[in-house]
Amino acid sequence: MLSTLISCGTFQTSFEVQSAMPEREFTEVPGYVIAENAILLGYTVSELQVSPGGELDLELHWELDEAPVYPYTVAIRLVGARGAPPVWQHSDPSIRWTEGYQVTHHQLRFPSQIDPGNYGVEVWLQHPETGVREPVVAPDGPVVDRVVPLMTLRVTDESPQDETPRAAPDIVPLSTSVFTATNTTK
Image (cartoon, rainbow, N blue to C red; front, side, top):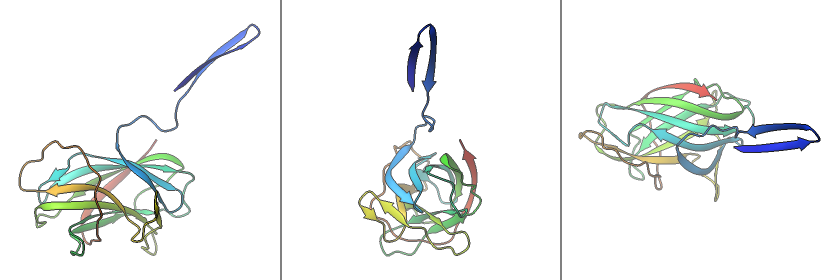
């Protein structure tokens, strides 16, 4: 926030300038640009540990230079070890994209038959009609599989523990899921 006092003869005024992006705490995702103008700034997550059949809330924080031409679908998936088959995936077509800062809210429900273990959470945008993933550019260049590694989620039969989110290492592809989402524009 910037406060300034301007003096013009006998007329004085003061004003404050606030950032377009409200101050919210979230885990940053460094420099991923999706579909040429959507910047994934970061995420907040209710838990980093979930039981099979459990739920968690995920918010994705975005900055868009302009409203996209297409109403892109947000897709989220869980991946295991490299080369392993997908364990969970879903696409949400209900997002109404606008220019500027935006938070998308996702309530993720996981299948009861998911095996305990550590899974990478990945996100991407896809074309609503073709299902084709939109290009992703990381700080070091284009991402070949067009996904953003978000975090590591632990699936366990134990009750969730309070942990700090950490970035996911190298991750792999997935399929099938249950997922609901809502959208909030700020």
